[in-house]
Image (cartoon, helix red, strand yellow):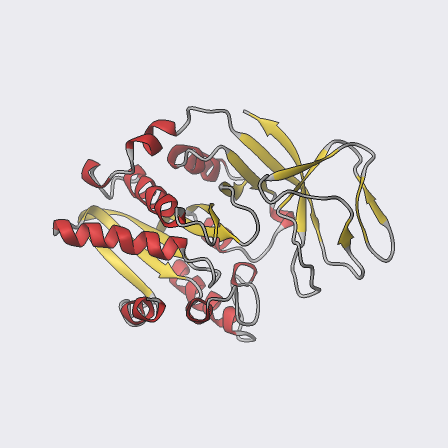
Length: 303
């Protein structure tokens, strides 16, 4: 199945390898959707091919605009691993040093030479099985996009000085609205459906598809109907020598509460203690010095 997908995408778009362009009947916005930026995260890719199958069965096209779907990390996808040399989602705008660096550079050049209106990056989780929306808290239009197309109630809102090299930030720098969704665990069979519904909601938001290809009714009716829990980054945790967590964290919760004055980690130089009630989000179970980060310390608010 993976090789078949790779063969379909390899040369489908002469301007960007392992991507495909769907054209609408009329002029309109150019959108991008990414799947498998990490090779062991198939949900976004499978969701796109389910959508394309629906179009083909109906002998339909987009009603306007243009969609570029990109399989982010083709070699890692083929091998079913997260990455080959480095995390592609920390490698933008790219380099010539690694496989992912070269791929990031190729993708960056495509973004720079096309007027991209919006970008959706679809991921899944290696640990835990929850759904999450991710965006830059400093961008109002990215927040608006997230709240307009997704019923997911847990949001991870990062500050730019806490992360670097993200695909969505490359898009944002060039004027595109951009966001990430986590569809649940890699192994959750519902991941492709979560991806498909978000993909359709994204396209419908920009009027590239009509009601016959809309997301499920439950999905649409849930958007904006519940309180949103926002985990806003306070700082990033780095894999310093000897770093380890000293608190237990659940795979089933987005954020683990760390009460004020409680220790939560230590390394060879110091102990980390919460200066207020804090939340540990996306901690790594296995820590290596090659990691860009091993988790985030956040504050939590509900709106």
